[in-house]
Amino acid sequence: MLEARNLAYRYGKQHSWLFNDLDLRITPGEIVGLSGPSGRGKSTLAKLLAGYLPPGRGSVMVDGRPLPESGHCPVQLLFQHPELAVNPRWKAGDILAEAGPPDAALLRDLGIEPSWLARYPHELSGGELQRICLVRALAPRTRYLLCDEMTSMLDALTQASIWRTVLDIARSRELGLLVISHDQALLGKLCHRTVCYFQSDHRSSACFPAAKPSFVRKAFPVRRDSPAARTDTWAPPPPPA
Amino acid sequence: MLDIQNLSIRFTRYTFGLKKKEVCIVRSLDLSVSTGQVMAVIGQSGAGKSLLAHALLGILPRNARIEGRVFFKGQPLTPERQSAIRGREIALIPQSVTYLNPLLRVGVQVARAARLSGINQKDVPATVSRAFARYLLQKKVAAWFPFQLSGGMARRVLTATATVGMADLILADEPTSGLDPITAREALGHLRELANTGKAVLLITHDIETALQVADMVTVFCAGTTVEVARADDFKGLGHLRHPYTRALWAALPTNSFIGTMKPIERTSDTGGCPFRLCCNDQDAVCGQSVPELKQAGEGWVRCHHA
Image 1 (cartoon, rainbow over the protein chains, first blue to last red):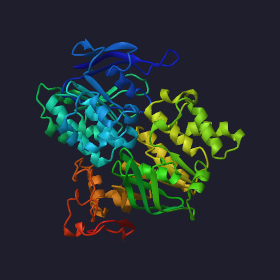
Image 2: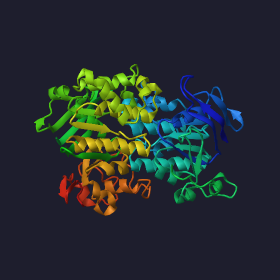
Image 3: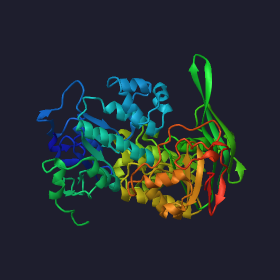
Image 4: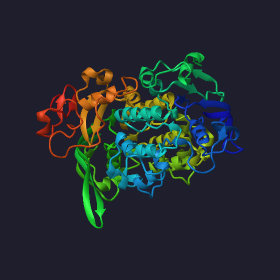
């Protein structure tokens, strides 16, 4: 289980706390949606969970242990802007090889053409580069995937096909997913539950049950004891402010 | 305001040693935007939407070759004219946040854009603070560096940079990606206001639903060419959309069925015939014979043998 306990963060002492006492749990195989206004720390939370930033207060645990200091991190983050997440002087093939030799079947499923691997990042479109980053993040040792606006730069057809592939992989490997998006319709289709942090008081304040996602329920049959069954027990949405 | 006819963009690429190869990214692209209009451009990622914006400003890399005719305000858009009017009469909201100068405070960057667009030096501070207020950026943000901004804030700073001046044509390349729905609607609402005051906006986007709220017309790109031009109202249901790619795109939206009814287009056919026939579900013998012309259909245009 990926667990954040009493997490708080601020960028330096002169800035205010982005969030306080934030708790989040993602169990293997669970897909959690996260939404909230822009500039309130959604991406920062993702960076904390993936170990890119040290928490200001609180802790991030994977199966009761802190994130490893070195080696492959079991929590992988996909950034909002893939062009900032790759080395501009490496070819796409070298970027992929960073996480070990890429899986040929995965490359085919995501529609990555072999000719792309010889190109530099600036020669690929944002959508093509994001798929390269996705393959790199889906290395065999990855157990939790944090998708920060992963498909916001893709067209609807590619978005649908990429999510289908990611959901298939997540199901077969029991990956836990955190999906950060502004698109409520997308979160409704993908997630077992949606969390909305970062309201005006900057504290975790509201949780609401996701709409019954038939698409996901077909892909993930819900067992009584599975995390997705908990959707029924979440509190109703708060009245709009 | 802007009229593009039969535009194509090619890139030369070194394959091995000094051997060169020419790759055609955009072919036979047609588009026109008139005064007071918001023209949304949607379509496949990698179809050349951003390249179009860069071609209009003349900021493509040196290995690019552009063919076709482009008219801006009735006059041909030559490279000399492009460098004279970019930033003044044509402004760009870039797609990526890497377009901000990483070593300059964002307030300075917006002020510089305002100065370059021809605003009087002593009016610049007031204009900049108005632009910040309009995009709901706090005053203290002006003193921050780009790395301190969140994705959505950087996007709003870029939008402020382009709209702070008095440009007549605004090329907005994905101005809403990474913004929450309320901020996105306000940013687009402001582009709509600019169009209502007699400017023209070319809105390149993937967020079809938000774009439809402000756009008059929609151009659909696929594989580097225009496949359909439709009114925004035509997107109310599948019945009015004419091209199979547009219909597939509409059906794949999360608010609709979220199912890819068509294979995502990775490979296009160069061997003559319709470029999409390899991916299209409705193809038959006619599609293999000739490239379809863009023909008028109702108030829009479509490039398909079966429309």
